[in-house]
Length: 140
Image (tube, rainbow, N blue to C red; front, side, top):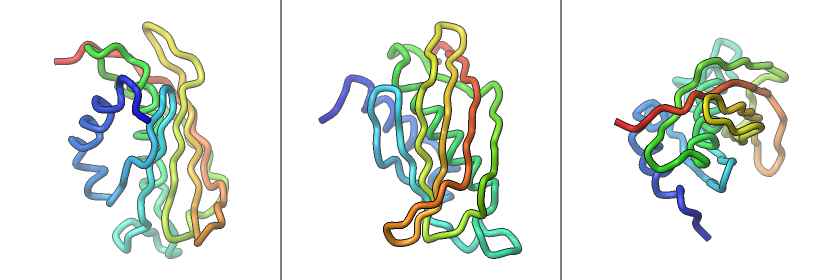
């Protein structure tokens, strides 16, 4: 089942070269929520052989941003104005999963949250919690 903004969200995600570089995929879209999965590639690991926090932040920020975009009028985009991350556990596993959602929509600011999990097989470990603010912008 699709909803009215799904095509817009998918098109925007496809234009993000950073997500392509990370091997990330947009795996779920619904009104006010999205999910992005990314493998923990050799080039995205830190010295302890776990996912670098930069990977965690990048997919969490994008998942939250696309959750916000999913509720915007068709003639608007969003940009992050601030984002806080709480790293809860090392980013271990085969891949990371970021689940973004809108906490409070608004005309001037959209409050968002993302939770990031490390997955090995069917086991998931909560590795990060992010909160932030997106600002709606008219499309160019």
